[in-house]
Image (cartoon, rainbow over all chains, first blue to last red; front, top):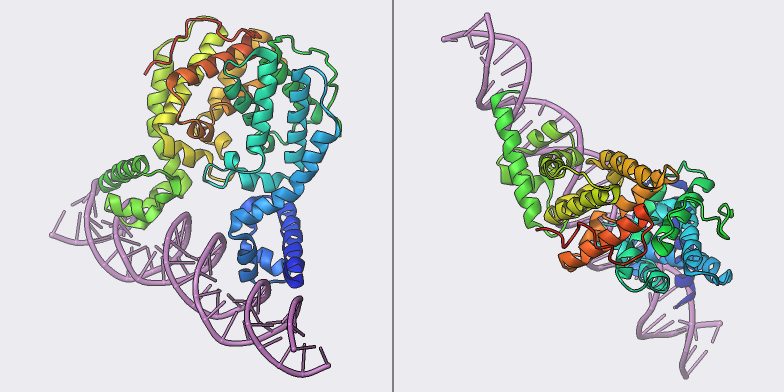
Length: 195
Length: 195
DNA sequence: CGCGAAACGGACCATCAGTCCGCTACAGTG
DNA sequence: CACTGTAGCGGACTGATGGTCCGTTTCGCG
């Protein structure tokens, strides 16, 4: 890749990141805005990223690395329910941090949430955990359901909830689904969501 | 309401319904298309419904009546898990029948799914059932999670699943969440989804 | 029948994703 | 360093679409 191209790519991603963070709604940020903020022409932007979705995906890829790091850094271990809970917890945290970006990605109209980001990856992981915990029956659907419970617009809808409430909800749900544990507070290794 | 106004309103709703059913993607159907198909001017359409969302909501209100009928017709009864399962089952059936419309409604970009349709209503109902089954702790979140598990785009994503697979998934999830029942097939009163 | 108001319709506007093409400047070569 | 082919640039342009405006039509009441 030519030097100016690389420089522009970086500038665009930085500008977009900034604009999306500042916005309260994904489509407050137009492609023209991004081009202008990055100090490049619109053509540059589209040649590099193909279309709006492409740009969003590139942005996501960057930020997603942080998430992937957080997920693999603290090595899972422990019973499957705790590992699943850990995953969901990090996903929620990520989506709270990248509000507008994840909203944009999950609402793009086509079958976005499922073709985008690392949905497939997480789903596979959760299917394995569910299977380990309670057998293969409906594991596929249960994994989808768990991921649906951390959909970005639900996170957004409940944005006023304090960490503790999220933690309680996630823990209760995860343990119920994986362990069949109906007790509200199966005082696991969880504790309040770390922040 | 003046006679011509009423007539046009009906025509618009009918045309829109037809177009959305025929489409495979919500935004294949433009407001101009609807106006043209209904044989009215665009102004009429916007004066009556305010904006695109308003029209969608009106459409939904019509179809939603069928769903509400189905839900109140077969009086619940039985343990809370079975009642919740019944609700979710009907919601899925509804969303499969009204694919494009519900997709449009739940993806409108603002906090749609939650301000739209009868989400609030269903949520309240589910909170009550969850509370009855396992107490109030996190009942709020669990109800959201159950509704997230029947999100229209998930239904769309899994559109190839046969009824039986959906039924198994819903039953397993619902019973796990409400009863803390980890056994895959708690052979309840459920049976395959009726069609 | 006559009239005021409600309703109509389609031209019009603003916005935005995405395209096009003449111009620029990077980087390899002699 | 000068030369040159080409990757890359940028911003004017297009097409589509949601939404507005206002002159004209139609309803329905007295």
